[in-house]
Image 1 (cartoon, rainbow, N blue to C red):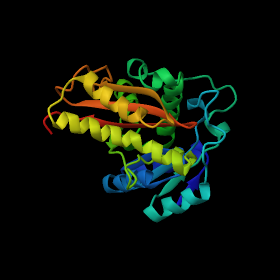
Image 2 (cartoon, one colour; image 1 turned 60 degrees about the horizontal axis):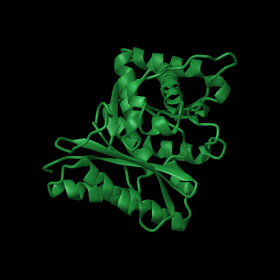
Image 3 (cartoon, rainbow, N blue to C red; image 1 turned 135 degrees about the vertical axis):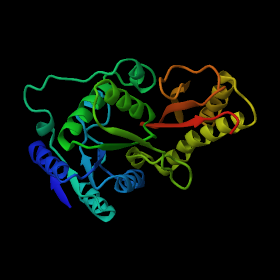
Image 4 (tube, rainbow, N blue to C red; image 1 turned 120 degrees about the horizontal axis):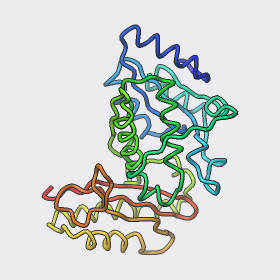
Length: 283
């Protein structure tokens, strides 16, 4: 497995692969890899001839009071995990390589970035869309796989790729969970044992919502009230948002007469966690 730090070198390798007729699969990450990331890599290996993984903690998607400096990093472990899965190349550029002096361009996707994390984290999705575009231009993939745990991000990238006529297939992979139900996230490492128990309310509330829908409930406010009640029970958690949305447009869904995505974000201690599930009536 190769580790590449320069955009030009990554582009040259991608061009070589393309000349050889190889289908390139790509997983963008911020490193500190876990089983959720590895599942994306395995899926890419099933769908592509060669697989590239980027490891880059992108400063432009962090707000001024967020956790860029303390975001967990362990490149040595990341290399070992990628090697074990059979990744062909890790693209690990530096911040100056991605954002050289004088950089002044951003990619803004409008409507689908307004609600949810877009409201809570101003500027976040400009940073996401811009860095993903730069990574796409460096790795030149045919296929990119994103975890649906970051559901809004997946919707934003799909919208961007469609709007800008990027010749890339964007695939969403179902959320990978710990045995206790907690959605896998690099930020889970911030949680103390007690906080981790509190964090389980996120997945528990999603299951309760689907149970309501399975029993025939379609009223959005009834479902959201149940979710809020579970999240608020016992203290130690502060809700950022709980919302039902259309799966593609992220417009608010007042009812679950057809599939709707339930998205939530909450602070457990100082750690902000997100989770979601698609509620399907008549399941």
